Image 1 (cartoon, one colour):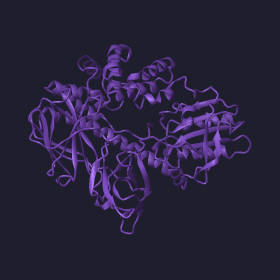
Image 2: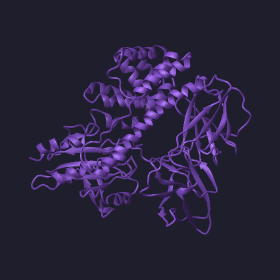
Image 3: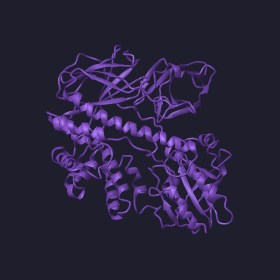
Length: 561
């Protein structure tokens, strides 16, 4: 798995036995799912998740939107319930499992939809999440989109790509729907005559960008207070993500070089309100949630005495295995504010060894490695922990070679031997390749990227500026090689039209990560873009993750004298 750019993914369907709506038996969460207009969705589900986000049980909402989720299989005093529905974005809440009766009405959110640059219909292989084929959707005069695809007769499942960032979603032409296991739904159609004619009409989708609204039957109960705090934290993160995305888009559109900067949301009011909840909680669960969530956004390098005391209270009263660490992502801030990792080593060790959410724990280790760039001994120890068999199946563990301070692409080492097919006129060449032998005596920059990677696109102005200044100069010049990890070379050909012509060398590695190219450079789980700068003697000058394109001119001025 590649991380860091939000690659569109089609996750495997979760295994469960669907439970129809039945009269609730205590303890249970009961309620109704509706859209913005108060009407039940075409199809919706509610799911009880365990501590590490895996499915415990699933219930389908009735035709009226009503559901009942038994809570007797929840392992903690807090339980996460996720919701999904056709034409809507997935949502989740956290409830106190002891609170009864526990009722709510939830208005489902919808995705924010940008003007699509390219819509595609994706058909899946029978009984599988693997893509069978992908076809472009062509816009029609009435604003709808059309794709005609040759397929064998029978039932077929498809989703729409390109409408929503990082998601494939159901179409507007469906006989029925199937949950895709990743928060969205597949449309099901019957093909006859050997051809499918898919019409997608964006006007038939609900209003985009509508937020989730939750009304608890007891608005002053524990669950209502807990979700009040957590929804405020979620809103801060959503606002921050939106501002970053807007800044990256503006930077790419402007053609300006230099790094992307943006002003994150001001967390002052959130922290004031959350600390007030801590002070007046009146319930140990509410106090625990608010105390942890307080540290869930921003940095605390200038923590007040009250914040230090609150962090120490959390260490003393919140278990290392608490699901709140998964829900809030606050552990790093709590540890730092409570005196640092050395002062809280026993707690950190228990968290690493015992917390059941191995994905989240491995992400904590990964983030600590990033923060240890100048402390190679500490980074080595963290990488060793990340290679523990406990984390073997996690996305972060697949990055261990990439994060290792002694990795094959460490500055000062000879560049490893690698080779990829060349892209010539938008096609993968059968005869030409680019490799570590292609640039003898030249300084060259390798850029591993993808068209769907927003940080990669945001760096395009910087790369073009580098090429204009150093790639065309007389005498000693910079050679550049961009290696795409897209699923198809067609994506690269389409991307390289204005404003990003990328007039330098191109190779194609493809999306599979078990190839000799990935292994040669230790890129099994890279965060892209990945950069590698090599001098005229074949020695690595710098490489990701410490690499910074915006500071490269000073280095190149020296190398290309």
